[in-house]
Length: 94
Image (tube, rainbow, N blue to C red; front, side, top):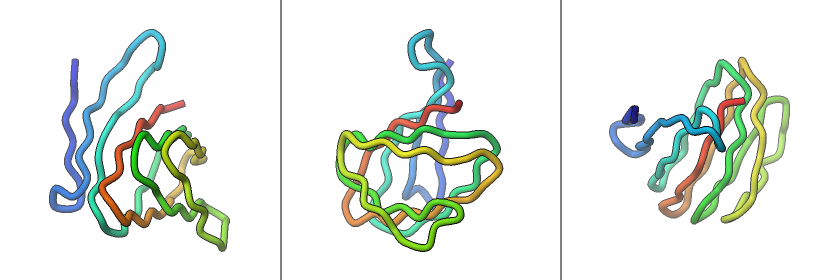
């Protein structure tokens, strides 16, 4: 079953799904802006198109991730994103 979610007044939209090869995941798009997300469980984020500037928990410097790159977010944490252009992503819940 697909689960559609919308955040930040429609500036971030995602579709959740489960599959044998990916597990529980969501795919979505973010428009320009700055966002903070909380997560209960660890996540693996893959940038599909565009780019994200990311500030991970415990870090003091932002890191840029372009299309094709992956970063991991620990569970029970908050991470921050800066989006300069519409960017698509795949989030796997680990």
